[in-house]
Image 1 (cartoon, helix red, strand yellow):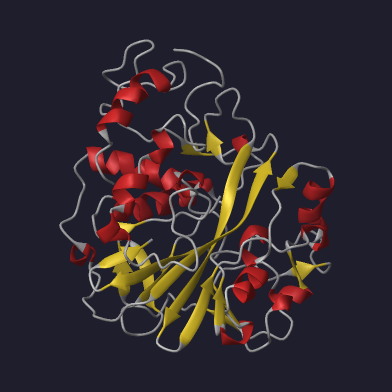
Image 2 (cartoon, helix red, strand yellow):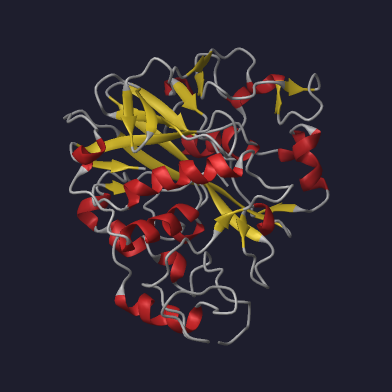
Amino acid sequence: MALSKLLLFGALLASQAGNTYASYRDFGIPASSATVDVRVFNVANMTLIDETHAFITPVVPGHESVSFPMYSFIIEHNNTRLMFDLGIRKDPQNTPPSISVAFEAGAATLEPYKDITVLLQEGGINLTSIDAVIWSHAHFDHVGDMSTFPNSTNIIIGPATDTSIYPANPNATLQASDFAGHNVIKIDFASSNLTFAGMKAVDHFGDGSLYLLDTPGHLPGHITGLARVTPTSFLVLAYPCPAHLLEESKSAVSTDYFWSHDSAPGAFDLPSRAAQLLALSDLPDSFYADPVTAAVSLEKVATFDADDDFFIITAHDISLRSSIPYFPAYINGWQQSGLKQQAVWNFIDQTNPAFVFSPINATQ
C-alpha cells in the first residue's frame, strides 16, 4: 500500500522519542494565507487474499488477508479543480493481464462500488471541470479509468513513473487508454529549492496552498500531497495514545509477536516500545518496489504526524474509514473538530478493522 496506516506506527515512535515540532514553520514550510478546499471519497473497499505478507511483517495468524479502502480527493483552489488519486476503475477485469488475473482468480475481491466518475457526477461535479488528475503513483487502485475523463483533463505524475503500456510491455499495469488524448505532466523536483522533512517539494499553484512531495520507494515516481487547508494547518498527525487504548493494548497486543522493554508475557507495554510495531515487507513478492527507500520515505512523512498542524490521511488506512467526513463534506476543519485526536490511534483499538497485533480468537 502507498502511504498506509504504517505511517501511524512510525509516528508512534516519533512521538515517544519526543521528536515533535512547535508548528509547521519548523519544517521550513513558508507562511501563506492561500489555501485549498479538500473533500474525500471512499471509492471502493478491496480484500487481497493471503497477501498481507506482501505489505507488512510480521503477519500474525488470522490476518493473512488484507482489506483496505481506496480514497480519492477532490482539491479546489480558486477556479481550479484537481483530483488526487482516483481509486480503482469500475471494470478491473479490463486492466492489463498483470492485474486482471488476480480478479479472475478470486485473489482480489471488491465490495459493490461506483467508480469515481460516477460519484463525482452524482455529487454535481461535472467532469469537464476537473483540470488535472494527480496520480500518487501508477498502481491500478490509484489511476482509475482516465478514458472516462475528457481529454482536457491533464495527468500529473512523478518524474520516475513508469509509463510503459501493455502489450508493448507484457508486465505493464497501464494501457493505452490510461493516457490516450491526455496531456501528461511530469513534476520537476530537480529544479525545486524546497525541501520539507528531507523531501523535495514543488509548490503546485505557486502560492503555498498545495505542495507535491517526492516520496519514492513504493513505486518509482511515488509522490505525496501536502494541502494547506487553513493558513496554519495541513492535510497529509501523533497525539499521545488515549488512556483507554493504552490500557487495552496491554492485553490486546500479543507479546508472542511484539515486545518492548517494560513488557511482560501477556502484558504488552506500548510506551516502552522503541521501534515501529510493523515493518514494510521486503519479501520477493513485496508490493514495494524498493522497500528500503520506501521505509525512509515513510519515516520522513511520519515526521509530520508528530506535529499538531498536520493530519495524515493515508491512501489505504482502514482505521480511518468510519471516521472521515466524506464528500460532500469538506475536511478543511479537521483541526477545529478534533478529528485527529479521535482517529489517529484507531489502529491500536482491537475493535478497529486495522488491528493486526494478536492472532484471531487468541487470548493473552
